[in-house]
Length: 222
Image (cartoon, rainbow, N blue to C red; front, side, top):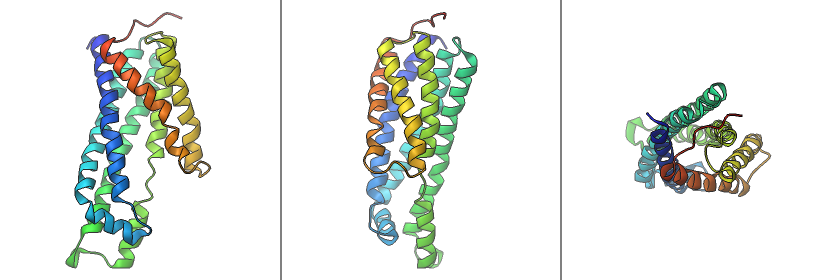
């Protein structure tokens, strides 16, 4: 494919990724609300349709990550093929981890809705449910942040998109690279773990629209 085609596919996919990622998070958050594990499992059973829809959205988001990995690599590899390959690997890893997490969500849904002889005893169900709910999206998000940092750095150095836009992406990505490991370590908690994604959201919306409408310039030689 041409650079223009790859740029437009990447721009559309940025916007598509946002369109499926945020609803899936909202649906899963609503479905897993509750004070204890018993309440959370009951909530999952009541929102079984929401959980199934979220699973489909997560799957679509996983494929979107793979498409972004390939198209952004095709755009940036001419400037630095090694860094572009590392960035592609990070985004592919992000997509694979997100896809694998679907099995845990489906296991939770089965656990919450199982009845009769197939249903595990209550203590076992609660223990398994507690374990399955421990999945942390900060892990695939960390690979996303590193891959995004590398791609934005290449876009900036190659002057392939407007410099202010590339800087926004680089700073937003670096913020997540620093913050996400702190979240995994338990240092960052509460609302800040959601607010730290706002700069990245601004970049992906603006960057997606730019790539979709304007495409990319040929990489500058530095």
